[in-house]
Image (cartoon, rainbow, N blue to C red):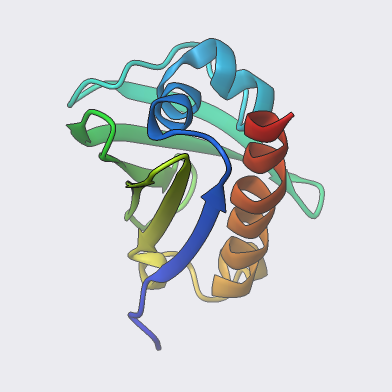
Amino acid sequence: MSTQPFVIEQTYNVPVSQVWQALTDNNQLKEWYFMLDDFKAEVGFTFRFSGTDKGVTFWHECIVQEVIPLKKLSYTWRYLEYPGDSLVSIELFDEGDKTRLRLTHSGLETFPADNSSFAKESFAKGWTYITGTSLKEFLER
């Protein structure tokens, strides 16, 4: 079983401050990410949301682990009904009038191997859409 984290990078044609705002402002998160009741970029803040895959609803519980304004946001990522704990880290790199984002999702191997919703390919598909389509269109519209 692979313990390699899933890593994806995207570049957006907007400054870091705009990307950071999209990652940390709940009103903006609702437009491109998931419907969160609340979100605060504060270590220890817990947020929950649901996502559906193959007709099954999965309840996520995440706890903010690290906040370095304009540079890094990381949070745990687990499912209320399933074993396993993972970590999502989002790093931002200022490239002048552009921003490079690197998302690393580690610990995927801790989720049930017999459920295809937890396959690395499922996370790759989800994060590719979220960072490459949803967030990109939100930022660059």
